[in-house]
Structures are given as structure tokens and as C-alpha cells.
Amino acid sequence: MTKSVFLTLSGRTNAGKSTLLNALIGERIASVSSRPTPRR
Image 1 (cartoon, one colour):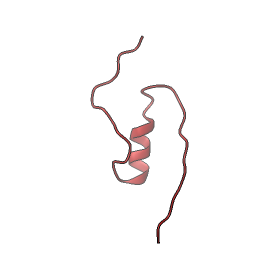
Image 2 (cartoon, helix red, strand yellow):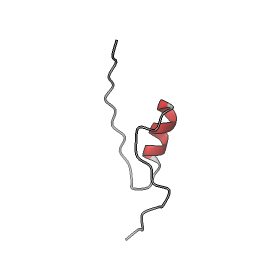
Image 3 (cartoon, one colour):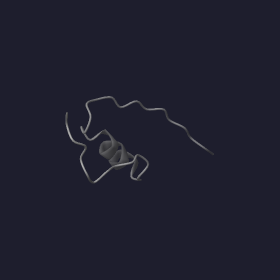
Image 4 (cartoon, helix red, strand yellow):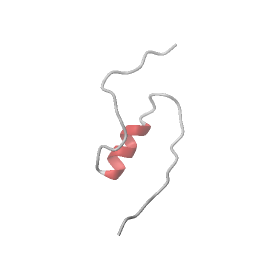
């Protein structure tokens, strides 16, 4: 059986949304960079 969930995480850049999603799921499904993007 396949289960699907649609989830929207919104917030500022570099707020940790992908890291939070990966931690909640327990797998690396969202890409996370080890290098922070420069702020403009």
C-alpha cells in the first residue's frame, strides 16, 4: 500500500525547513547544502 502526503513548509531562506523535513521523515528527501547561501 502506498501512502501520499502533501505538505507545505514556508518561511525565510536558510530557516532550516529542509533540515526539519528530513528530521521529521527520518530520511533525506529534501536537499540540504552544507554551505550556506550568501545573504544579499
